[in-house]
Image 1 (cartoon, rainbow, N blue to C red):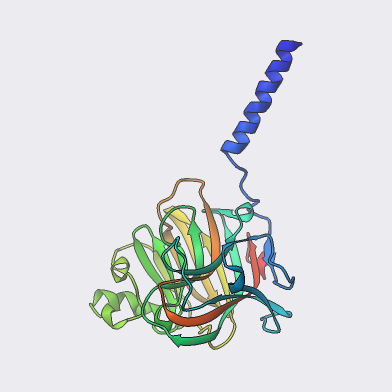
Image 2 (tube, helix red, strand yellow; image 1 turned 60 degrees about the vertical axis):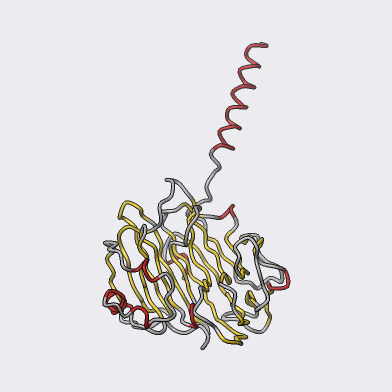
Length: 289
């Protein structure tokens, strides 16, 4: 009896150790939603990089319903951890998806309370990041006052759409040596590489400007470091672009990805609020519509 009890204890300890060594991933098919109608922030978010005085549930300014989330950045803000101005949320670890899983995201955003002069520095409004160091593999950018979306394919960055330039002509402009005329583009050298990613553009030539009103965005995302990835971008119900091929930065197999939103930028003399509403995530398009 004593020997059997010892075996049971050892087996139980082994199971517990295995669980902690290999944490259970979030259910990849479970819907994740936040309408921001509650007066407090939902538990699906991690707010460690959003100071309390820069984060608010705003009433009377929403895409749907009565409330939206507002993240505000000011000229004097500084985050010593990134040596930048950072006010952002990210999906909590408990709901983060596995990189490479089929995921659809839908949300509305708007930029309000914009004041001051914006230089040419980096200003990331959000995107999807693998759980490794480096750039987000899909990013929403607002450099130089231009809203644009980029993706990473290993060491190459790809322009998916912008409010200023038709993305179809972007790579020709860059390779033709005219990139210096695009003052809003940072890290220009990253765009020159041959990624092998196939792009199929929709009829929409330019992204809608989030300063002019609410923009409804939808993304189909499945990262693939072996060349089997896909990203589809929709704005206000229209297909912007479909990208297929090697999508993502180098990361261990089974790593997570997470959505983050807010402001992460070089020091700037500009104030702005990013509003987010009706966030949805699910395994199919139907699950987020």
